[in-house]
Length: 418
Image (tube, rainbow, N blue to C red; front, side, top):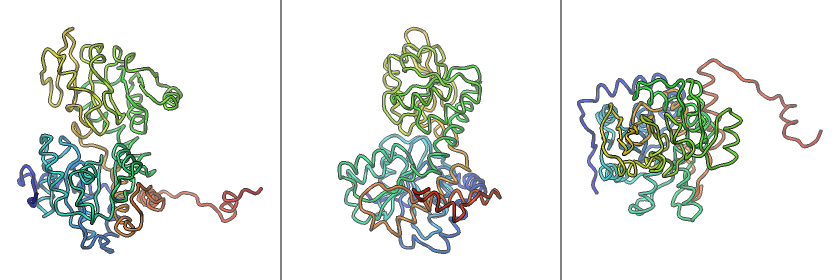
């Protein structure tokens, strides 16, 4: 297909979008420091970079940094409901290739992904692996010139690792998600805060005193549970991993199966990366007014098709909240159509959190540009020097210093001798 320069809702929204971008930019000191280096070095000169990440203000700052580093950038979303149309318009208005409109259907969403790949990228930056999936299926011919990629989230890294295991991965990918400055802060503190910010804004309900069921106790689930506890909720965790279940118990949470949790939960948040976490039998046991939402990447964790099939009626109860009336008279409330609640129902992670994550992305893309052709077709960890640099810059912006090992201490910790 031959892609247009851009496909956005309305260029007239650009001024409002630029205000959002500039607010984010002023609060992203780490990315600004990396951007300054990119401007001076121009590591992406003559290169094309396709980016599939939630199209909102923080992502716009990353896209601009890549462009200022010499790249021709094509940006699209990684979720049909997370695009902010004014931000997409602002970037398109600057001349960037942007293919993102809030609320598109599945086929339009896929078309936008294809448009972002149409100009033949040298580097791809993914959040969930959608670009990678197209490049490993219908658009394999475009991979010949790809130097490598970067992956932003747990789900995407998992998909890529499966491709590598099956010897089907066609280019090297940096697992940005697994960097310490990503999963420790973005996944835990970013998800924890943004999920509850969105839930509270959408529902306008109190959290304190409610029973919150968190499905999955990975890094994201830990953050969601931590913030629910801090807001005064009684927290129940469901898990399939016995070690993580033990960890949840040690953190002071109740652990049970979803079958056990379904009748007692007031708010359900899925954060597993798997499908069919909440299904028909669970909905049938839920309280009247139970709220269900998803904080995993794809909208398959809460099985809304099964819920719709048993419902006697559906009604929009509040913006972005659909109530499903069940035969027993109870209503189950679904937030943001079961998509990522913090982005489909809010502004996503706090700016300072994404400052760290996108500084990692920018540096990892530079690493791919320099060394990608020598890395082999595999998923690689973010180099420690990149990870540490993000932390060092952040500490410097806060005027914080940390201790350093003396030569004697270094010798001690690197020796097996007494």
